[in-house]
Length: 335
Ligand SMILES: Nc1nc2c(ncn2[C@@H]2O[C@H](COP(=O)(O)OP(=O)(O)OP(=O)(O)O)[C@@H](O)[C@H]2O)c(=O)[nH]1
Ligand SMILES: [Mg+2]
Ligand SMILES: [Zn+2]
Image 1 (tube, rainbow, N blue to C red):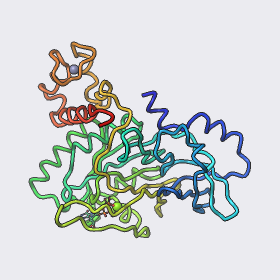
Image 2 (cartoon, rainbow, N blue to C red):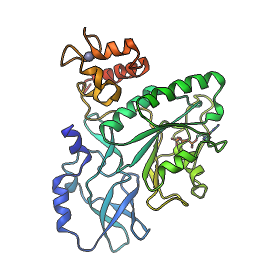
Image 3 (spheres, helix red, strand yellow):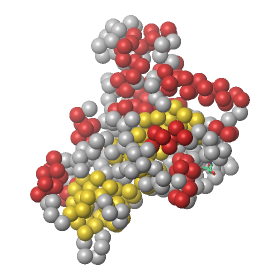
Image 4 (cartoon, rainbow, N blue to C red):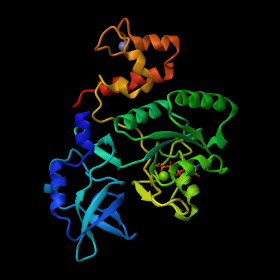
């Protein structure tokens, strides 16, 4: 985990630099980051288009792009009204993913979250527990409190409801708050409103589940772009293309929520095979009963976890996810 913390925290060099250059700088939060330009919202509410200085400042960053929505930064106001980002404050947490371009580098998707909603939909597209479990591993590993939100409950048929109840029971058992809602019918949004008050949260999940629609429902003045799912694939069409942090109207001070682009798969960063089971909270007790200290919990005799699955105290679904994630982490670094 040490390596992981290095990845989500700014370098000590950046912090040292920060202390030297207080004069004439403005503190703000990154509300949009699209590549070369980063939008920074200052305390007075103004939003300044800002850039990072040359690459020299980023030399010890492990990220392809070292700043994410939710980051607190200090900027210098240039004569043309744009901002130059001088440094990033230490992060309390950050959600990275394996870069889609190169497995060596990772991308930081979001920073400093009080809460992350893993958004799914009952249908179009259907709930994907494998995806949920991968995200829960990430949130546990990177210290991000998370809950599950299953939208489009209006589309659920009777058979879906049995499956959805099973999903809700599985996550209730391991202490992950799970809610159902329908933006269409304006149902089930109250618990979300309550949870997000005064906090920095994010909606995260596959394309088409209704992340942006949820934001519009929570604050209709936002009028963010949404689009129907594709009739041919039944999937979303990646309507939101970059992360955006908004301050919805009518909520307590400090309420901020990020919309994010639909994600196909979350490539886990810095999680070793040996520690994977540590991010399945229900495996803690059973793990201590394994005969071998280096047990992979896949096929060894005398494995406490496999025993617990047989007894039913660890669900088969979660164990299947453990196996699938384990396999995905085994893929060699370069191919
Ligand atoms: N039936 C139904 N449709 C919904 C509901 N919520 C959203 N939708 C529809 O689902 C489609 C996708 O919604 P978006 O909000 O664009 O989904 P998204 O998760 O932001 O998708 P990306 O931006 O591509 O990641 C839109 O046509 C919405 O109108 C709901 O509760 N019920
Ligand atoms: Mg969207
Ligand atoms: Zn074991």
